[in-house]
Image 1: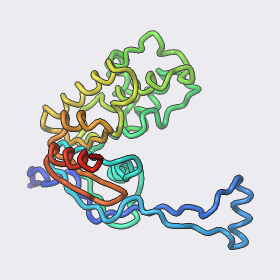
Image 2: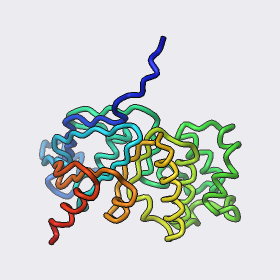
Image 3: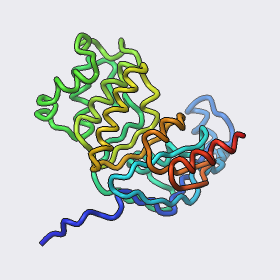
Length: 251
């Protein structure tokens, strides 16, 4: 008989490092790149975006990632979401993921908003029948009913974000990954998105990993925070303690 016991951890990040190879000089064309490559004149330097990061997240836990620009927060989320593969270490994820990392990624600007809903839904694993049954709900949340047959290239970035968020959160995921999503669009849409995220949190069934440059927002939404700075894990603990320590570095 299969065990119904819930896993102890929804996400396990074990000694993860991420290395990017960066060209030592700026090249202006692909032709120049290949000429130098063939002549063995192309040299790279290593950039370690993440250095031996380890932390675990229990099911239903709400964890914020904080750090300055370029600290490695978004890289960490992309590894957890499966967008990037870690150079070293392992990342184990248990459950289905709704990644709100780059809203609008995978959209075709030449297609209408309606067509993009089906396209993006397919990329997220939704069937046509599922989208048919939830189309009105998606459109209502996005508040763009009068613009559904307009090509996406005529949309503002905020309008695209509305559709992307509505599609990605149409069902309750096991793990919700949010990277600066609530900084896109007008303040009313941001509040609407936060309410939906809070609904997931209050259900107790959704594990949330949240990145925002607003520490107030992190403290309002999260229970725990992980501070990553210049690729190093600086601190992991209760959200108010970590955010206070993060603020103090600028004092």
